[in-house]
Image 1 (spheres, helix red, strand yellow):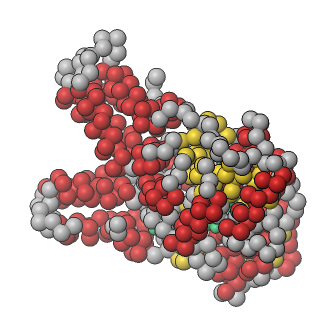
Image 2 (cartoon, chains in turn brown, red):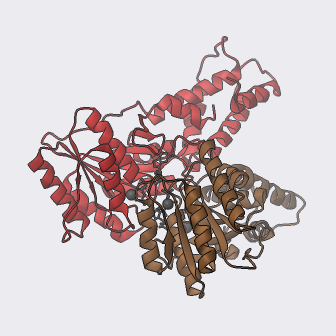
Image 3 (tube, protein in one colour):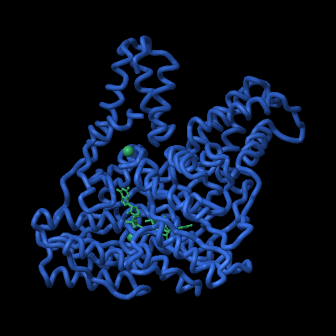
Length: 278
Length: 297
Ligand SMILES: Nc1nc2c(ncn2[C@@H]2O[C@H](COP(=O)(O)OP(=O)(O)OP(=O)(O)O)[C@@H](O)[C@H]2O)c(=O)[nH]1
Ligand SMILES: Nc1nc2c(ncn2[C@@H]2O[C@H](COP(=O)(O)OP(=O)(O)OP(=O)(O)O)[C@@H](O)[C@H]2O)c(=O)[nH]1
Ligand SMILES: [K+]
Ligand SMILES: [Mg+2]
Ligand SMILES: [Mg+2]
């Protein structure tokens, strides 16, 4: 952005920067429209101010949805992990177990993906890695039944946190979304107020479909926050801007690798400046 | 055809003068709408740019067909051009002159490689082949077990490896030998997910390629991928020379513009689409359907 003048070319370049970060053409143009008006009214003259203005705008959007984590007054805090296929739910569940254990909390995990081949075994490896116990049944059993067991177990053992790993599902599959609703209701019947947090795990490489995913999972599962995975790649994850704007969901953590420690708290400033990096 | 894009285009042509004909001016307005549609479908912005140039040239040189409204005509031009770029449908896998044919399945984390490997094994055995599966994902928890479960359900043999075989290249070589001995004519190699910028793991893939001399290297891509599709596909292609693409999770509502980006950047054909989690949910790629879907029709 070392240009002298604010002209159509520069605005187009900015549009492409935002689009290539998966912010989306509409969101990008809405942001730039505000800036264009200020340019027209000669409120901005210096091209170097543009990036700053966009960043401030984005920061405003991301910070508006910020709120503290909803930890249960009385343990366990129940967290439901949801999302489309392959987004990183199981891995993130393992990483969260490591994180919460590291904070001195006792963690129990629930293998509620009873559908995908070796999904339970995958979570069990994470159980061993993080020295957390797992509640499981056999493949093919009713996920709500596993959730039911796990909630009772978490209460009996006085676990601080129960992390429920669910099967990946496309938000368009109504039967599978109903299954998720059922898990959620089951949790609430065993422990009032559960699940306390419902985290939508979103792959940073996701494009514009991410918004529809967030809408549908919020409707069915009552999403309370986002986790953006695979940010260690070249994808920027810009669709979260549209998601937080529309659904007012905070971004809790980011995934930056495949190991237990590769989960970081979301930092909006860092996220925004990475949008402008090539 | 009362979908949003053609509605939008109808409106575009109504609101401008000379609505009855396709002119240079109304064409520009229509092309703007199409640009937005392509970007919303996740086609990479550079690919959109290049594509729009092609469409503009084609459209302006065209006779006005009185049987079509201008909106319909523009859509037809764009759709035809999309189909041309996406290519004819080529679901067939090539086979080696000297069996076994080795097929490497590669891609980013979570794109659907293991599931697609199972699906391909089923497809091949339905088509008279005798495939052998092997997973060389020695990294992800329970990755090899996942493929083993799928293989067992399908009744297709898998090379399990020995406890000493901890390296992908060793596992893959032994699987190939096993296929030769047991008269299996195809070996499907499911590899670990990796980022295109992971130098070590990308080198590992090159080594696998060298050791196996695969006939097909299939890049498995998620239909929900956004602008990053170009970067990852380009790098996998540069490093490996991919021979085809499998586009997964097409049973959702993603428009799948990544298909166009990947095809544009690699020049390699889309061979299959994944349309579900079960092993039978694999279909041939149809450029006409993909084109309609990208346009949101
Ligand atoms: N590079 C990178 N890979 C990740 C990250 N998070 C998850 N992965 C990888 O992405 C792939 C899919 O992760 P899973 O945790 O199995 O995803 P999932 O959502 O549980 O998948 P399903 O249960 O099949 O829907 C695995 O190979 C993970 O190792 C991340 O932050 N960075
Ligand atoms: N709905 C749907 N789900 C799919 C499709 N293909 C794969 N999946 C799901 O996507 C998730 C990831 O699939 P995998 O086959 O484990 O992906 P992978 O590329 O092997 O993952 P890693 O080995 O961890 O990199 C699983 O939940 C699969 O069931 C598809 O075509 N449609
Ligand atoms: K990144
Ligand atoms: Mg999982
Ligand atoms: Mg796999």
